[in-house]
Amino acid sequence: MANVAELAAAALTAGGGILRLAPTWVPRSFLQPGRRLKLHPADYYALGAHRGGIDERWFASTTPAANEGAPPDEGLSYCVHDGQRFTMQDAVAELGAEMVGDAIWNEFGRWPVYSKFFDNMGPIPHHMHQNAEQAKLVGQEGKPESYYFPPQLNAIGNNFPYTFMGLEPGTSKQDVIDCLARWDEGDNGILDLSKAYRLKPGTGWLIPPCVLHAPGSLVTYEPQWGSDVFGMYQSLVEGREVPRSLLTKDFPEEFHDDIEYLVDALDWDQNVDPHFKDNHYLEPIPVADTASEGYVDRWIVYGTVDGRQLFSAKELTVDPGASCTITDTGAYGWITVQGEGTIGSLKLQTPAMIRFGEMTDDEVFVSAPAASQGVAITNTGTEPLVSLRYFGPDANPAAPAVGDHKTT
Image (cartoon, rainbow, N blue to C red):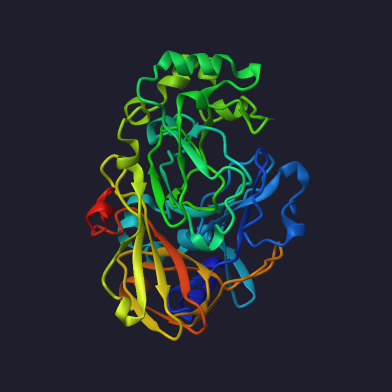
């Protein structure tokens, strides 16, 4: 096998700056798969029942999954070219700015974001993700994230299409301390302190670090920072025990029994914000008025975290028989969710069912130079060609702000 630098360079050249990616499947031992990821019904436990069911597919990921018992490459995307495979992580390390652009390479030296579909039968426990300062204490990075609920994958809402977010205004830190103290008594009651929002396909949310949230059972497209840190603050979900180790795993060991420390780790002002929805809810905003040209590109994830755009995402819909050239100011990971067509010289085909380990034609990574030069998209099918693509930090300075959907 040629070395990764040569192979990745050859793949980029052959694809006109676009790399074909293989599906990346990730299990979660504490959750029940929602079975809407198009994986074959026999394959949701392909990694073994002890690892848990597969409920996530990761996109353009150079971030390993922080799962107990996982192999070191779990969560990493693989590029496929000329019958050979190499990780996107290695390709970025070898090619640098040719892949991710000068700004991201010079500041981060890697692709610092990723996205995924997560798909569960029911809700996830109420949890937070540490911020950069907190995560650094355990040798990791913080994790702001965002959600978009693709209509194509959400014909069925499963058991609980609602997400608890934050804490009710007026909640005290002592209230949460009391919940954590009741961890071994069954349901510690933390959801009594929160509010659930009904999830609507075709909308989304922006979730900063240190904000509690219990994602509901819609299939969720989730652009986020390249980290897998979290702390679970709910002891029982749908009658299933949440091990206390999942509360403490990404805090320094000396604070694992310090409940006040664990509560102080929450961003209190954001959690009890009386205008939580106004400050976090997203609806799609068209990039431009192009419907008459046979396509519409829409912002689906936008806004800033602590004043900085850390990631953003768009949804492109191309009508049957139509073509367009899209130009972007940064590299992106692309997943096709409906229809068939081409992106540059590569085929796009949305699969109806995927066997574990099987290759598909629905996912690519578009390098920064290719994105800036413009990428040609053609719909060769009889239904709309719909794709989601996410970007790294500061890639879209012209993106809207949270709340702008009300004025467009």
